[in-house]
Length: 228
Image 1 (cartoon, rainbow, N blue to C red):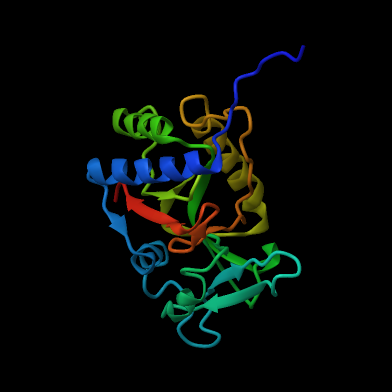
Image 2: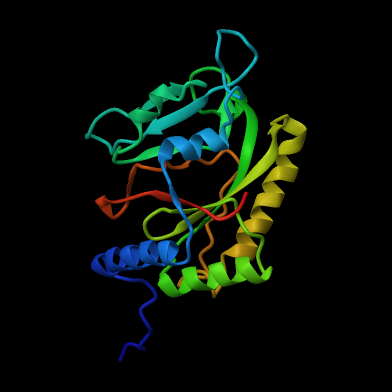
């Protein structure tokens, strides 16, 4: 007889219910939801991105992902005006890394400045979110600038006071810092699957605020401000 093991994930309808519960919890705790434009304007302050050709500044590179056979994956260059942000807000699968880039593609070689360290914690239900908020409040965990509800999980954005230029000799140190953050934040109190942390690098893109989460069009990615 097969040994019984407790189910360690939720079904789709359970995650959709958990999404609504987490949404209500954030508002109940007084954390304001911030619009996609305001979120990215704060992440990339006015004047930090390219305003004129060859002004020495980088741009946001937003990526629209399309499954094989269902359209072409595209990358959009978003300058300081943020006008092209609408190309991915509301999209099925839009990604934006917290980095400015030279050129027109999201590559390590084109990376210019890092504006935030972002930690992805997946499989976060209502109780796990409560645990995180409590730990942010009592100092057990470092409070992020923003908590982004990404569907089944959360993206924790730690905005930098000044962007860090991504010279090659800084890459290893920044990657080690981010991994340490991930391993500290993704644990048995914050995730129902604590043994499966997703160790992502500093160049990783994250679902665009305002785009669809994995749960569908009625469950968009939302940003909540936790600190200055």
